[in-house]
Image 1 (cartoon, rainbow, N blue to C red):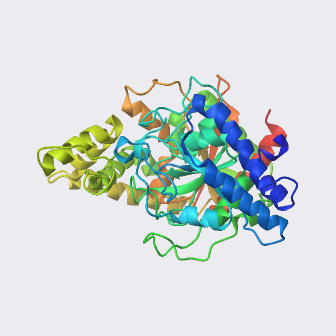
Image 2 (image 1 turned 180 degrees about the vertical axis):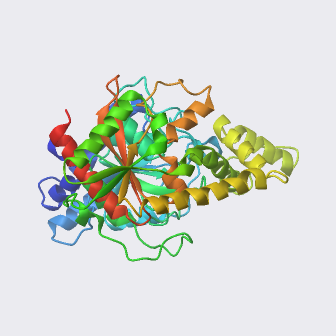
Image 3 (image 1 turned 120 degrees about the vertical axis):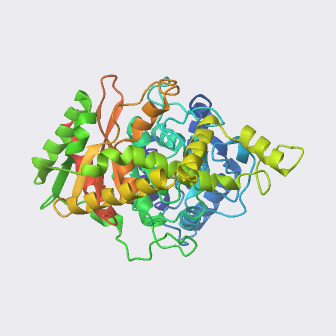
Length: 480
């Protein structure tokens, strides 16, 4: 059975060709979850009975020669801030413990319409606020490559699930790097699509102008296969893009002919020697295989981190106001409505969520709005303008995904600013709304994975897929 437990595309093909049944595949992954999840804490909710029932149904249709979907029988893990009608969605928070949404997110509908099988919900930093999955109300998730280290965040549970072979595919959400950073820490592929390309309907919002759903996978090909299913216009999402889009899988086997690749000059000061060496190796592979590599300047990118950590908390402050004990989730009694709300939010939210709500509320308050939130939006516009100019000269930009490899548990909990710096290379694409992907490339001095990030202009997701698949191939041929 092991030959079917890595590449999602092969799993689907073998199920459709009746070399293996969907029930066998799903059962095997549940066996893996049973054996490993207690130690890793990747999944925080499972739906085994429904998953096996769905697998049986798919197998029966295949045996009878009836049509099945593009993802027939493929097990998938879902980050627990994406609504699932069949079982609870908690956002990794006490305030939503035991809450069952009355509807499915659009991405869930699109996956299940193509006969994917939802295995369960994966752990995350509470309300997707964090870079280590240490801020979950259900305990931290561990990095399957080194149990003393974090898997990254906030989508650490999804990244861990794919790397540990608990599922071949998982979905996460990315607000400032929450797919790409854990993908890098765990040594897998993770992609943030263009903002609006994948519907956010049913994604519980952290920062609405930044959040985007995307896939985790073992290969770029698997990533493209899932993106082909979940991308597309959704009238239920007011930010969804009503455009004709590419079939991303068509861009997997192309070459570098005529490709122009940029390196960001302003990031040089943040590069440790081993990370810089890794980036240069990737750049050399591109240059030696037909691409033109040059340095570019993005003058305002140095303000990205501070800009993000005003805009994101401000939007979080507004979005999380709905969790008040009145409409859904936790309710802690009080003498009156005001006290009930205070008690509910005090007991329901963890320290990182409270920190960001307070920061965001302050930035939006009278007398400070223009100085903080307003200025941040101007800097965001300036950054977008910098990217626009850069993409007149290059097709894609490459950077390290993270400043370091995975760090040990507790290493940055007492210093939030150091934790926030984990996202310094990933945040700019969220502020701009552009696509970006991380693929495993190289190791740090503790033999933990490093990642290379590939960025491109809005709606150039196919170009990101193309270049990532080339780098993946060059890595396998040239990097030990």
